[in-house]
Length: 612
Image: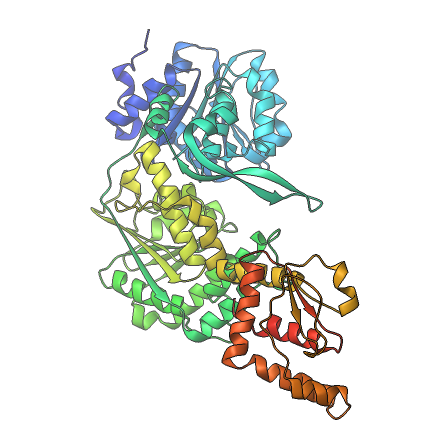
């Protein structure tokens, strides 16, 4: 029988009244031993999960709750427990790396940080011996990687819990593997084997990747998704997905690099030691910082780069309307560079103050920023500023860098789409430069966002005009926009050059029997023909030159230069084209038969000058 939420829980302390969606969320949790609360940011996941915990503790006196959360969320959970749900201070135990204050006999709720859990998980079996335990895992998308220490540790202790509830803005990150791992943690049988799951819901091709030791193995490369409606319906038995309709307006601004900037980007994207296919991931960070002009003091480029000018123009337009904006960047050196540029252009932009939210900013400063934000202010944030902070006094998000994870994008947007926002409209501006890592990340974001939209119906927090990206072209985009030395055209040309180099051979007349060639080209004087079939008689030595050379009246260097000059004529270019076509397109082996040294010069000229 389904348990209905008693109306007495609809109204919480402090004048808070649960919304219809929040009541649905509480009822979903209290009726399941495993569940995922996938509420979009701003819908009150914390309040919903804690209310469900309160209901169970009131019904079953010996039930105890354990909350596992990031350090940034500890204060929020504690505050909600006391000010909204009526717990006393002494009923809440804290286990963090900085603070150990708990009573295993009298606490009703234990808040344990993710990092502290690795050291103090031994308290869980002790608690389970005396009580029924309910586990709430906040930001459960951290469990997307089933090989992580966090995942493994929770796997070890989950046997001690009667019920396990996950909360997350989205259980889907950049692919369906993350969803599989999160759901399978709760119920191994829900999806069955991973192979069956991927066969049912993804389109893929097999490709080779390098592994340790330089060996290769086959992996799936996802090219698209299928049966999303079926998957969404199946998920409804274990996952409740809700969203609040915000009036979000998306736009993007883009510009091409200047010729000087493009030349630098081209050079950097070629790599340092040639083909870095196996380790290119780490170089993506360099490319992003390069585009962001974070290396302005070291690189030869304009002080205010193309992208910085786009940022200045964008913020000027927003600030002129008395808006305040959250500006996201990926790296600490970028955040410092952006702050410097903004202050140098403060008069033009017209902002009041700049705040920073990054990993080194402690909780007290974060709270100060939350309260202090006013009109015409700018808040610079890194990934550390996309979770467990309310920036609803701002109504604009500017993605100076585009997060690689769509989860981070949703979390970022969620800083301004809060339930108690006073703004009627929230704006999201994506800044990107064409032909660079920015464009790759922008297209990738649209692709990932489409997956989330199909599965969760999360169109309220994502662009309404999402375009479908053919995932088969993602690798092509990566080659084109990130690693120019791996550009499809260049890669194909290099491949052809290797074939040409191997299959265009020189030898002396007496060595011909050693070569099983398709065609033979006689570079010897006409009076020394070669006795071989399948001749490609397209090069005819000049009789006078060879006679002069053989009689000692013409130096070899002069003969060689005259012969090469012949290759530069229209007839010579046609001859070279015939050779290249035979080797590249027909798979032929062409042997240059030569007893006097012209063959190597001929071969070198073809390899260096032929157009592939």
